[in-house]
Length: 263
Length: 367
Ligand SMILES: Nc1ncnc2c1ncn2[C@@H]1O[C@H](COP(=O)(O)OP(=O)(O)O)[C@@H](O)[C@H]1O
Ligand SMILES: [Mg+2]
Figure: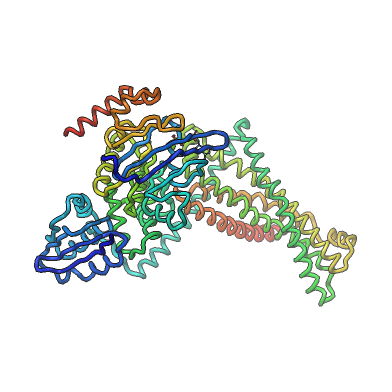
């Protein structure tokens, strides 16, 4: 990754709080085009809050956020819609529309944003569903009939519906068994290569961090405490980061990923 | 920096170039629509494509499949190879289910509707049985009674419902009296309006109106509550803790309803009689003393009993239907709405049918 690669998300001096509690305190973070960035942090450290603020779902107190070169504060409605079209989001619990089938869920953003003929829309939606590893039969199921892993895949298919440039994933592998989680990691790697995605991912899965992410941002005390690759994390001296990445599990994950890379 | 997509026919095959992305969908649809028929060599040269997304790639793939099974892409830029590969695997034609004969489909629908009515009836009977069983268990061991929950439900369905029930029954009493006076006056039979109001309200209208309002107000909220608990697996959670959801959730609600409906029927009937009296006084010129004196002659305790006896049975049916429908809710928000509507419709229907059956019963025993 070269230094002058285009910045697709730029967060500057962001302050977010609820009532008297400040969750994010003058946080700054840049995401580069084409990279997979993993945001880690203890439970409750504000990963979801940061993601939701970037998406404009939570009001910020100070600071600026620019996505794809568009400043959120200065953007008019058309530009906000444009951002919505170029970003896909996988929410922590899927957030699939419960009264629509999987394929209707995937078609939904296309229906809203693109004037596609129904036949083509259906074909592309089915293509996306198969690309995320679901079977064509699953397309007609309702969200309540899906397992946890299938829900995440279906939600990812919907996030990818409009061929976004950036996808946001909130804990994509949490709540999955290790095998499903690994399959999901592989899927994200493949899709990222196939579709040229930039991926912003909240996670606390060490395997995911080691195998999928180009860079890792560790969130602590409302800021980015450390930023860099897995090995940077292991040599970082921030107490929380050291504890998190210094454990045996982290070393195993890192070694595992080297093995994967070598094959 | 725009490169509109192009598709040209050459002797070597088709030549695709430009940006094949969603932004140019209209153009893409048009140019891929009629190409292919002219093409015979089975080669699509895609080296000139500068931008590609899933939509463009799928249109190319669809074109390739239309040309023939051995048509192929040539000159695929390396960074698009993955997308071409991914799309070549998807949307393989599957056997389509036949549409079927329209007469058969109609017959099938009728059959399914009949079956589902039967299943509903069975579910209702099963629910009454489960409630009865839970009640028995509670009676044998009164400490299992969920007193707090029952009182809370009673507060919601009886106390909080009182104002609206009073208002509506009062107005209905007024309307019946007004219509009675208006029409009876032609025959000089004004006084009989008291008989009309008294008997009609105590025997039929009071309880029916209150039951319908309770079905709409409390039955629907029971269904929605139970349904959303079902949706979030709260009911499953109760079950795994070894608790019986019927006893914990349903029985207190139904018991509250069975207690509430007679009370509400009583206050509703009184309000309706009061409304009738007020109209008779202001509109018909009948003084309250005379109204009350006539009312004493016109009605007997039997009329009152006929009305009030029906109330607990109606409440039981409303409660049972609400529970059955609530438990039928599946995962989606839509099914919650559907089941809530169907709970109200079914319980009103059952209330009216029950009223008819009671009318036959009371007539035959001479009450
Ligand atoms: N809407 C909200 N109102 C008040 N506090 C919130 C809200 N959303 C999140 N928080 C608080 O912000 C903190 C960070 O939450 P979150 O970003 O969800 O953590 P995580 O890093 O596990 O995703 C938590 O302490 C949480 O209680
Ligand atoms: Mg979170």
